[in-house]
Image (cartoon, rainbow, N blue to C red; front, side, top):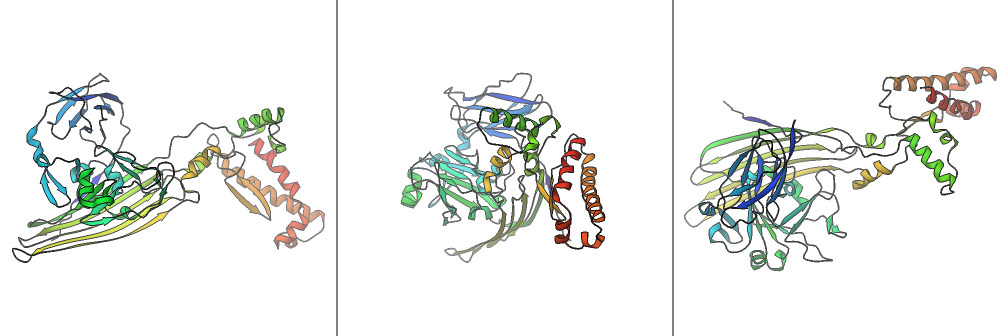
Length: 478
């Protein structure tokens, strides 16, 4: 008998009645702010990290509970009332400093570690929805700055440890995954050494397979990896099997992605008035005569509505782990499909991981780490510049152009104010074009097959100016 455990998770950031709660998290003994403290709305995945001064700001509703936790301090829960400012004082807890940290030469207790090392555990990663490794790091460790430089799904993020260390060189950190050093191949450049907006090798790693991430800074990194670790080191340990009963875990996730909030831009009427003012002072040349009377114009093309969409992201994971006292195993697979809110963008990933460990005898241990993945990235033609195009594009330009008998009919998207008239508008345009062609054919005493038989015959008989001159009149009427 096979038992399948299915967990469906959802994430919603905009809660009814939510308000902004802000305050400061400070230590009880010293009274100083606690940096990197985690503030979580209980029962949700909405969380933030405090700043270097201990300040925080989060969206939550009255009656909900904030869970505040920090390394070396006891966890505290605070129920939200009517106040918008909630200051929290945490008590130091020295018993929590026995956590195990993965360093370059093995493992050690956090209390015995003198260098700067931060840790992100699997429990921390599961608190948020992550598609790539970079997203799992964001806001998790002090002195680690993670910024998404592109809205492209699956795009590599810029990871900076302890600030900018070079002006012209690459200051991305070194990644060590189960002892294997990886330098992301995505080229970097620009004022802030940002990735180009495309995916790299790290996009093939399933965040659900990560057991913990240790961030080595300063001497902790250079003493082990030399110059390669000058920008910091991210040591990633994947999950492994444990002796005991075999465990099967399955999860599926569906997330709705909303199009960005429209920016206020000029419609066609406002654009026509703007052009007339520029013409009055000689700032622009002659514009099309269709813009002469703004009162008869419609709204024009809404490029933000045309280039963005509401989409879904789905992720499915399955893992199997277990083993005996001598042999343990961990097998997992995942599938991710994310369509970007910008038309023409998306990211798909399929990955498989196998970790095997065998204790052959007291002094020999054999292990195998196998990871295989495939990614498919859909990049729109202009990559990250689509937002600029949507905001600055001319509202007189149509979204699509339909060719009827060799004549170009400019079709706009349906107006939000008149959605029912859009099919009728298209039908009247095509019908009028065919009637004019038929009338012209009859006046010239030609058979109808000559008018509709070939495109060239139609172009010879039907003057485009007759049919196209009717279209602005129909548009004004509708």
